[in-house]
Length: 372
Image (cartoon, rainbow, N blue to C red):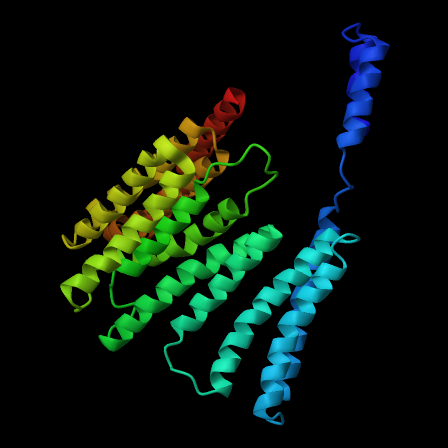
C-alpha cells in the first residue's frame, strides 16, 4: 500500500488522476490486500527450525527404537505424522507459514513411518513400494492443503519412486547406474528440464517446480555427462520391459510438457531428441563430437530462454557452455601443449572467453527484460 500511495500521489500531482479516482483506487487496493507476508529471514528461520525439529524427533525415535515394543513403535510413528499435521492445522489461521512448515514435517515423517512400519512387520523387501506410498501421501496432502512445500515433495518423490524401481532392475541384472547405463540419467535430465521450463501461472509469485528443476538439472546433467563419456551399455532385460522403461523415461516428461506448455511443448521434444542423439554419439567414442553436441545443447537452452524471455535459462545455458569449453580444453587441448603454453592458453581462455561470454549473456538478458 505504501508503494501504491506513492504512485497515486505522483500521478495526482502530475494531473493524470483526480483526487476522487485516487481515493477509489486506494479503497479498492486496501480491500483486496491480504495479510502481510513474512520477510525472508523469518521464512528462513521457520524452515531451519522445522528441519531441526524434524531431525531431532527422528533422532530421538532412533535412539530409543530398540527399547520399544513393536506396538509402541507403530503407535509412535503413526503419532508423529498425526501430531505434526494436527499442529499445522491448529496454527493455520494465525501463522500460515509455520503451518506450512509443520505440514511438511508431517509428510516427511510419513516416509519415515512407512519404512519403519515395514521394518516392524517384516514386510516385503521391495523398498520402492514404500517410496510410491510416500509420494501418494504427498500428492494427497497437496490436493487437500495446496501448499507449495507439498507440491515440492510430491514432484520430488514421484521421480524418486520411478528411479528406485529402475535401480532394483539394475540390481537384479548385476548392474549399477555408474556402469554407463543411460536410461536413468536421461530420464532425470528430461524430467528436471520439464520442471525447469514449466510456464508460470499469472497469479503465482514463484514456481517451486521451476526451482526444483533448476536445482536438479546441475547434478543430473553431470551424471549424464559421466555416463556418455564412455560407450553406453543397455541393461540386459526383456524387450518388453526395456520398451516400457524407455516409454516412461521419454514419454512422461513429454506428456507433462504437453500438459503445461501446450503447443510450445515441441521444444521439450527437441530436448528429448538431443538426449537420444547424445546417447548415440557416445557409442562413436569421439570426444570432439560429444563436446560439440553439449555446446549445441547449451546454446539451444540459451535460445530457448531468449524466445520465451526466461533469464534463468539464459544463465544456465551460458554456464553449461562455459563448463563444456573448459572440459574440452582440459581433455583435448591442454595435454597437447607444454606446461607454459597450456597455462597461457588457460589464462587467455578465462580472460577473453569469459569476458566475451559474460558480455553476450548480459546483452541477451537485457534484451529479454526489455522485451517483457
